[in-house]
Length: 139
Image 1 (spheres, one colour):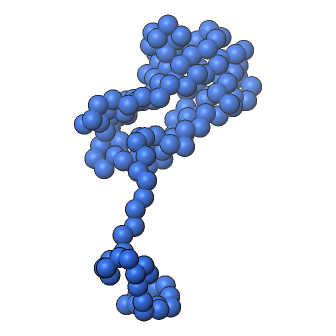
Image 2 (tube, rainbow, N blue to C red; image 1 turned 180 degrees about the vertical axis):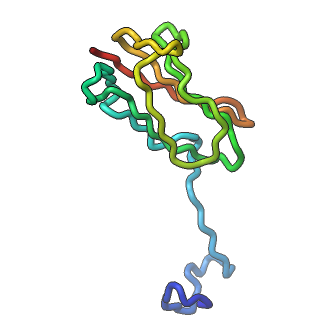
């Protein structure tokens, strides 16, 4: 009733006669996840053959609940779990993020066709949380 921003009509009365208070409590569900909105371009298929179609894999995500900088790492592994490429390792705050993989390993060479694992992880005070997504490389 004290704000000019949003005019609302007020009707005086108890909303529920069984509750003896004049207090409004608003609750919300807080999910236990640190990433949302994870999207891989091309349906997770990368074709780095120079034709400008799916030559790079775009990863977009939103980091949640990071009120102070936390270590975020994005890496590509082969199916045996061996590291292929480190894409990102920096401290970030909450918000939308995006990065791309060009289909090359840490030595700058194109990886062979096949399935790879994209691992997105965050290190917090409560420990590490990670999500793994499959990525296909085809020529």
